[in-house]
Structures are given as structure tokens and as C-alpha cells.
Image (cartoon, rainbow, N blue to C red; front, side, top):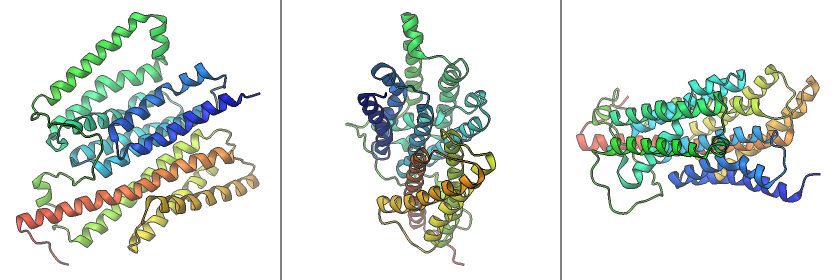
Length: 378
């Protein structure tokens, strides 16, 4: 019989992992560090304070990892003022997401080494810089070098350690306490690298801020001046609606594939899962794009989340009803939980992508007014 206190601890941890990432868009650095630490210690908490079997938690753990990683990426749309840094972070995020999706489909652990989670530490670096400096001062060369060093020096050893060697750091230190000195030395090297990267930045500004502000993107002047045909506002908006549609399809597809593969107690073949995921992708994408093309804007994140949740939960109930007729089944409660995570990510994407678009649009308008360049009319 499961002890009530064990379940209280279990759900307290799950809810903490669910709600703490909400702080990342507004308080990026403490939010991501809190999410990272909780991800690192959650199973230790269960082992020490409960007698729960942890096999059933693995699916939740993976899904919650991807969930907070997606919120972290979406917060860069809302906050980051260095456009080149944003482009690097977007590549790193989707590169990792592709790797996780391939791993879930094939179970080849080496894929997690080939597609390391460099994005998370790059995000931490940028936000740590923002606390005391203007991140717009980070040059392209410095940003590329930072991403490369994190990839090679930090993440490759880390991914090898946990996914290939399958070593647990806590057990490794308990077995031989002097091993902790290796971690201290590695941390010292990391601090030295960060100091070297920041050595030529101007003096730190007084005070610090952990709260993020909505960003106005920093472009190279040449990029702003040489944008093809100097978009009109309508062309600019239409072009980004097109790119937004493509990215949204990619994002929903990858999240849906990952969540579908790690759902516990699913008896459905690949074709059944593919059909269900495809329907979810098409309806979610078309709904938001249909509203966007008609100039309909969500007046609040909560309203969009409620509407999208109703749509997605209805789709899941329908899928559950139909799949039984084809000798398949899903765990409805678990599926609804995973769908809730997906819907939250979709909702934040819709909101913060708009911030991203209009930040760039206002920058182009500002550039034109300063340089006297007129936009061509069709």
C-alpha cells in the first residue's frame, strides 16, 4: 500500500517542477538555475524520503525536462536584446530537441552525446552577463567561441558521463570522497574560461537586476540597412507569419513526438501515434494561424491557454475513444498531463513570438527614421 506522505512528497516535487519554470521568462537566471537544480535532485529526494518505485517517474522526468527547456527557449524571444545570441540559442535548442526525438525513436544513447544540451548553459552564460553588463556588448566572435567552449569542454564530458558511462556523480563521490576535488578543479577551469571571455568588456554597471525586460533587438546596422527591398510593415509581418508557421510546426512536431514516445502504458503502433500527433499538429497550427491572419490577438495568455487546452483535451478524448476500436489504448490521465505541458509551450510560443516579431518591426522602423531610408511601396 502506498503511503500518503510518499504521495504528498511526490506531487510536491512534480508540481514544483511544473510551476518553477513559469519564473524563467521574468526571472531568467534564478528560474533556470532552480529548474536545473530541482531536476538534478528530484530522484534523490524520492530515494531518501519515500519508498516509491521510480520506474513510472521516468516518463514524467523526461517530459518535464523538455517542458522547462522549451520555456527557457521561448523566454529568449521575450527578453534577449542581442539578436545574434538569440539565433545561436535557437539553433542549439532545436539541435538538442532533434537529438532527443531521435533518441526516443531509436533508443541509441550515443545520440544524446552527438546532440548535447549546449543550449541550457549558453542561456545561463548570457543571463549571467546580463546581470552586470549590457549583453548587446557580446560580439559575434565572443558568442560563437562561448557556445563552442560550452559544447566541447562542458557538455560533451557531461553527456558522456551520464548517458554513455551511466555514472551517477553523487554515488561516485560517496564511493571516493576525494573525487569531489575533480569537480572543484573543473569548476575552477570554467570560472577561468568565463573570466577570459569577459575580460575586455567595460566595467560592470552598479547594482544588478535579475528581472528581465522586454527586449528591443540589437542588429548589426548593415543587416538593418540591407534587408531586401526594405520591407513595408505588411510585407514584414506577412514574411514573419510564414516563418512563424514553419517554426511552430517544427516545435509542435518535435515536442509531440517526444511526449508520445515517453508516454507510459501506451498500446499503439507507430501509425496510430503518427496519425494522432499529425492531427494535433495540424489543428493547433491552423487554429492560431487562422486567428493571426484575421488580426485576432489573444488578450491574455490565460485566455489562450484555456481555449487551446479545451481544443487539445477534446482531441485527446476523441483519440482515446477511437483508438480502442483499433485494438490500441492510452493511459488517459498521463496523456492529458503531457498534453497540458504541450499546450503551455504552444501558448507561450504564440505570445512571445509576437513580442519577437514586433520588436524587430519597431527596430526596422527606428532604423529607417534615423537613416532617412524610405520603405518601398508595392
